Amino acid sequence: MAINLQKGQKVNLEKKSSAGLGEILVNLNWNSRPVKRGFLSNLRGGNSGIDLDLGCLYELKNGKKGAVQALGNAFGTLNQEPYISLDGDDRTGAAAAGENLRINGNKLSEFKRILVYTFIYEGVANWQQADAIVTIKYPGAEDIIVKMDSYNSSNIMCGLALFENQNDQTFSVEKIVQFYQGHQALDQAFHWGMRWKAGRK
Image (cartoon, rainbow, N blue to C red; front, side, top):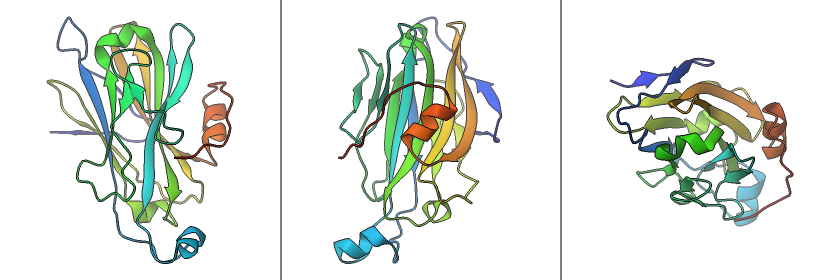
């Protein structure tokens, strides 16, 4: 039975092995219905599917900070820094597997925190149409569900869940689901302190 997090609720991941937490999978799935209206779709001549992107900000204990996301081709690596990887870029939501971030939970002691987010790259007028859901899976434990159950925002960026290192024993996971104008606004809200510039994919 899955754990359905409420906004602001925080739970600790259960450590099942002395080796670590194992691989933590963060999956984003959303509705791929085409959106009929929108400036971008008109430019491209017709309707386009919804394109949400999954990504994260990370901060390591050694002071390194960065983002893992399709934008800018920053797909990360699982077995070396930043110990996070993004499987790919689902442009429409049609892929059954959605988009997946993989976190190397056996490198827990290297992390300070991870902020998982999604943003509208193109094609959707509002979040309710996307009907997105995030599922966090890891070995030997119940899934953790983060539903995007707040919709009333015209902002393109949504902070989803915050992972924080708890004494090198486990991660706590907090449901955020808060909307921002973009990467820089999200960064500022959580005091990440990175420099941002426009990117493409």
